[in-house]
Length: 312
Image (tube, rainbow, N blue to C red; front, top):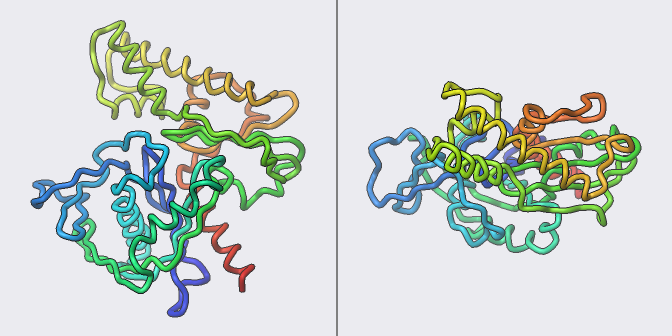
């Protein structure tokens, strides 16, 4: 959203969810793939030009890395995310206050480095780049770093009565948090490398074992989202069986963190929620799946707005 602070004297707050599979803003989503070229590529629909280099955005996913600050591509993806969100409002220039996040148990240790990484340019210095054929001029004036997953529910935290478990399933990690009567329990926050990419790897392995074939990741993603695709029945059955195996693993890990469906409610956010919806049985009266892939980015903006209001 364009916030209350979108005035000549205040920056635009832009929430960015830096996923390993997808970059999300409050209103846009694109894959995290980045390919750098020293010459203008043939296909330019998702091209970003910055400091003499051409970048094709969104043709693949990023590999998992525990320290995004060590990957220069995430700054390029940040620029693409800013341009995408500004374009939603018909804008190409702004002072920008970034609201971003890190996995629950990594925030305390990594937030200062992540902020420094995203503010690698002087806040008074204009960043000029072209994205999708449009020139953009922005200044990144400040960065807030919040906990992933939690941001997606913070705007209605008062609804979390009794004991609840929050599960944020991304492409690279799964974050788990216990919330009691609207209060996060810091001692019961966990981050595991068990995102949906692990499901994709398992599917590839099962396809190679049983059929000696590979299937395009786009087909796998379609099946994970919808439970179906236009492929042969034996291949579809193998993929669905592997997806069920992975999704049962999600529930097993939740039980290891003391999840009991009879004693608490489960709230699932992130792209992996579709796997729970499609491949395991669950009690819909006690499990809520938020299918808004942009929910976390919206939550970052909400938290940044709240912090700025509190600061006056």
